[in-house]
Length: 270
Length: 357
Image (cartoon, rainbow over all chains, first blue to last red; front, side, top):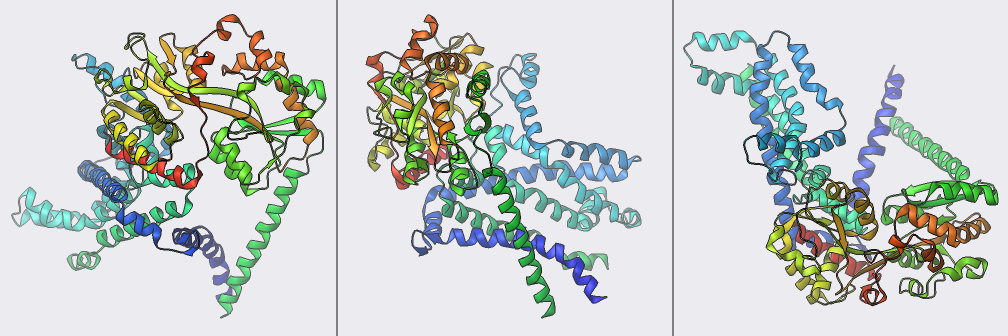
């Protein structure tokens, strides 16, 4: 009995050690490797050199904006969705874009945003074309938000669906206004979904390097851009790894922050 | 304890499996018989008809593989397990590969057509005696502009890019050496400057160009220039050639105060398995007729003087792509400045990308 259990564990353990733990160890070793053995020089450079700090702030700022916008759009949609009749059908429509390759979507947006693209042709009707849309902050954040929205809607939708409708009914019966019901009942009960949504959006947004290049035209610079440069152009793998390690640490911090009130949620459920 | 042992045993087993698999893969790659010739070149960088012709003439079977950046090619060859007979890196990469001991010497006596190459294309700093490389194509760095938005003759020098007329209308190629280089050239400095102060000044000057820059991109630049997305682009002559073919409004200018002269050369990697075939192929490609056919197909400038004479007049006399001797004098080949200086170039370029908006 015990042996068979162990047997099923083997692929899982192997997967984890080969593709999760080993790479993290390798990247950490690389980050501390200098010309002659162990060194902290790379980290010193990262934190003393203003460029990297500015880049980190940049990454955070854009990831924050992307997350905020996706949240503002996704929460109402998730709520409305949970009240709809053909939920499965609408849900499918929201998930559908995730089946299309990311690169393909990015290139489609290049076509829409470019100087003679769809959007500028539309603006022409109002006489404000050609506007510069491609390669702007707006374009970058718009496309990033578009891509991340399904990952925000799904967990929030699941959390809202888990709420017993009787609880909301009770709030109304006891005289709460719509706003009060939202603030005191709906929001706290769906918070776990919001938290996992934020994690699913914020963390990948920190290093969206392909979009910064294709849609942002390298006018938006995040840590992903720097990592690509250090690994591919200058082949300074140890500095690239250092940035990677800092990014991993930042992500862990974000994880800890967004999942800090797990027990609170349980209290409310009681 | 038992669990641990089983776990360790499993990991060892997998490692063994991977090792055996890797060996198998390697053997497959190397076990090529002597009739195979493996060429590793840039994508779409040879007239496919010539490969067929070569196969027919010599009986070799050509296996053609492609790469899209010097760095990717370098990493692949350095990691081993490849058996390329011929490879076509750019100038600075040749000197890097040479220093890393990845190249085999080339005996030019075994290549009769070697004499067709013009002397101005030989003996450059990346390979002073051409012991390791034979020129394939060459070109320059310059400015492409669209006469729909820019009057012809309005852009002649690097400094013209700083004009307020081109707000948010310039596309730059994403390459630290080239963009820092254009700034250095505009100040009358060498493109191989190693003086930190000069580099910082060049970067400060570049920051002033920031508001004019629409995007810093790589391969897509071609597409955008053809689609009239921007008025001005900074790119290499080879790319410009393709753009000019697809959009009649585009023109290419090499600023006379100085620019980059680049080479893509044949080399024979250390891993060569069919050296006789490699010599035969290089000789075949240097044949004036074949070289001319290839140059017409690719559109890049050929260093083969005899082939140049065979090209149609309008190509041969095109000053945009075959600059006069006078203009050639101010062109500089990039030297390999060593990892530290290259890092400095790239760091400054990254700073420009961040702050120069």
